[in-house]
Length: 330
Image (cartoon, rainbow, N blue to C red; front, side):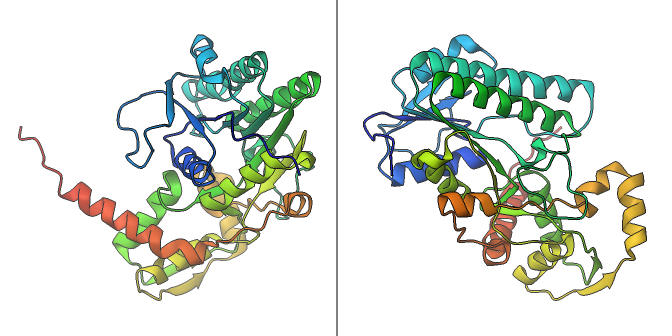
């Protein structure tokens, strides 16, 4: 099996973000020299050793990318704009950051002679599943600007890599969980930990997730295995979770055993269709990751239930720290 040389550094974009931080940790533990592309060079993680190269740059400013890509063997592109709220401002940012920014990075990487490029895309690069598990060949086109921009970035990378003859792989992770998680999942866990409900709605949807540490292992496999060149992979932990499963896992992690109150399917269908935001709660998002398991030997080691306690503990600790911060007097 071909392994990228350890003499050439790997470039990680979005290196201080939730996923990027874990990628950096995994590469450093593997003894791989790492170069981090960051927008702001202050407040870098104290766990990074002194020999980590830090380049200040931004994918939306192509001129800042030349130094980051020079002398690099592998690029792991995890930087991006993930907000999915509809609106003109966010739509333009998806195009600017997720497509145009990726395009600029790909162009600079190819110009610099990079041999491997791993793009962290999203399962949202295809349209939503229709009450069934779907694989990478699901033909429905994405229905959000976020998904469309990511899909454009995927197609540009794979076409450019084929023409240049380099190893490029697209990973489409499902919703990522683990310590340091942000966004809707963190808000949901924090709310459950704070309220400690006695009753939970019985929502029977199906959603896919992936632990951040398992995602980093998928990245290493994709970079090292020649079978991954030119391929697109869904990345999940292989489990299926309903929204109720997620809520119930959080409750058990804080020591409560709530009663499940079933909701009629017709009611959840109506809510999901009539109130767009509830699709994040009631909607289906079930993705098949058989391909990466069969082709690359990817075997996730974590499930939401096995990791929920540490996520709840972290959310509670952050809440306590926030509550003890001094407030400014008027």
